Length: 207
Image (cartoon, rainbow, N blue to C red; front, side, top):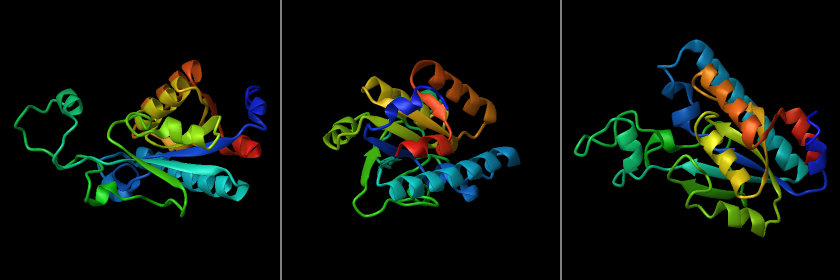
């Protein structure tokens, strides 16, 4: 076990679940991915389901952030980055998590009654959501982060959690990317700068 983890004992933690939605998790939406990448995502989804069950069993808060893309209000910087020009058709057929479409629906595990669910517009679960304040209101001091994808919204949200002053752990067996190299790189960067990367079995003992 990482020697920093035992120092979380006695502090109030929460499980933060990021973007477990069909656009990122459902095999029906991942047909362009090679088989190993789909297997990585499936394994991560299983880990997320187990993490949610373990947190609930321990009485640890489970908090959800989910991407919702308004179909009439594009994220202009994202469109520019992806090479879309003003006037191009949008949302594109491959746009993830557009409000009112199947891709925005949850997948495999859903929030329980009373669990905090926040909607985000960008990669970062803290940006414009009030998440930091809502966590502090609940006395949360540290976060275990799970979800999809490790190289995008999990990376951005975990880094932001650290910036907002929360001790941050990323559950390595409850996240994945659509590319193994990107996944490994993301966890490496997080481990260098903002989060302990650990397995669920290590972290659940602290809840």
